[in-house]
Length: 140
Image (cartoon, rainbow, N blue to C red):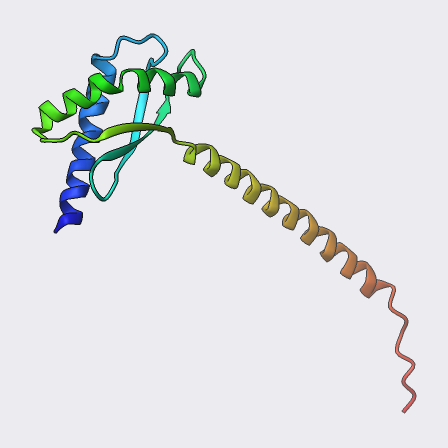
C-alpha cells in the first residue's frame, strides 16, 4: 500500500516538475529539460530527480547547478500543488542511461560485425582446408 502511494507521489512530482521547469524557472542555465524519473527516499524526505538536458546551450553540470539553484522555489510549488505537509528536498541527478544505452548498442553492433567478419573468414578457411587435404591412402 505504501509503495503504491510512493509511486503515485513520484509520478505527480515528475509531472509538476516538468511543468514548473518549462514555465516557471527563469534561470538561463536551465533551458529545456526532460525529467526522466523521480525516486523518493523511504521517509519521503529527499527526492532524486533524474533529468536530461534537451538542446541546451549549457553543459549538463551547469544545468544541474541551475536546477539546484531553483530547488527552493520548485520544492515550495510541489508542496502547494500536491498539498504535501512536508515537500521533499530535491536532488537533481543527470540521467546518463541514454548515453549508456548508446554505448552498449555500439559495443553490440561491433561484436556482431566482428562475428560476421570472423565467421566469413572461418568459412573461407575451412573451404580452403578441405580443398588441400591429402587424399586418403587407406589400402584395405
